[in-house]
Length: 269
Image (tube, rainbow, N blue to C red; front, side):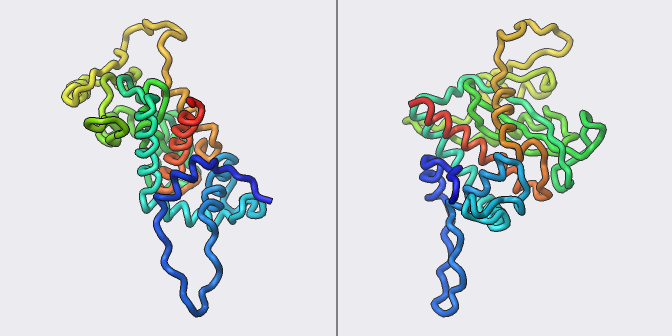
């Protein structure tokens, strides 16, 4: 008996984006391929439980972890997760659930046990190998864009790349939106040379100044991006990086961002 970790809403949006399979041979066709929904169910199981791919209970989810990992590789290389993210953001904007006037940026460090690309000695973890998740969210905490770097990269170095990587969000008549009006950030992003290019993109930087007291006081300025990181780290596989390939870990990071967007759609109606 299998347990369905993939809600219908997620599967209905993922299925049209999956690349087609090559046709089966007439003679000696071999085994039937594993169902795509079962493979996605196994990927979500790994994300939620944090188990290795070899510990996925095939009888429970309907697919072995090794097969699911191959599908994750293929879907990531095909760009399925970013296209799904753009579609969900467009739905949120069309429903009036996306607020692009205010956006927040921050980063979160995780340990990388097996090394690989985008890992480096972490300054906050005794120089152990680590990576960083960088994230921009809207006023409600909806993930807009995410990236992965090594643990020794300064947060501010990803400020402009993240802003430039924001997708063009459709959903309403007129031009797609791909810029917030205001960008909030903590003191780690307070460098004068970045304020001018932010303004050149039509964005007002709301970056806390170094050496000044915390004027808002506790609880007055909600840092929704930290709450979104808490949502992401509920997926135990994202708390520690085990993947040597950086693109596969980024794919595992993009999929929960899509799940968070879908949750907002489902709980708002």
